[in-house]
Length: 157
Ligand SMILES: [Fe+2]
Image (tube, rainbow, N blue to C red; front, side, top):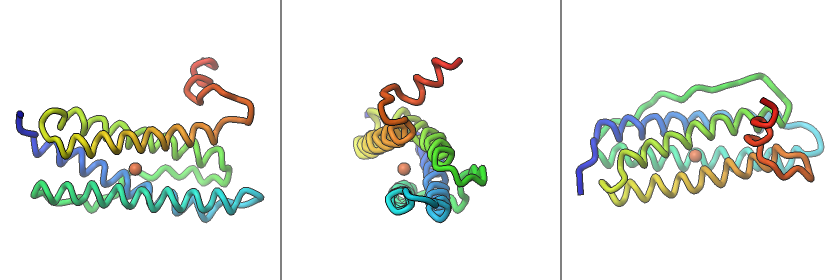
């Protein structure tokens, strides 16, 4: 089995850590701004996403120190469109989640067939993040609408 390029792997893990930490802040921030009939379920869903992002950040951070490197103390970009609209909040979240998903795919490409444990971690996270993105996509559909957000956007262009 070939060795992993530790420097490259740590660089991606640090970007994952930063982006998951940004998720903690973003989901917590938006959970304060949900008003109206849907507040209770949507607020608790956003809080649960913040908790999940924190667990993901901690997992990435632990991997960084396992590899003998220093975890980043920076936080990823926070897109705040100062919106109270649930649709915009979800679209913004989906965009950020897709960035994180791509980072996990980058990680997989770096560790595939080189480290069983890191490959397992990357695959698990891709699985979780894809299910999550799918869930957000379904929340963005109008009842009765089956096509995904991506398909609708493609149809409009
Ligand atoms: Fe995550």
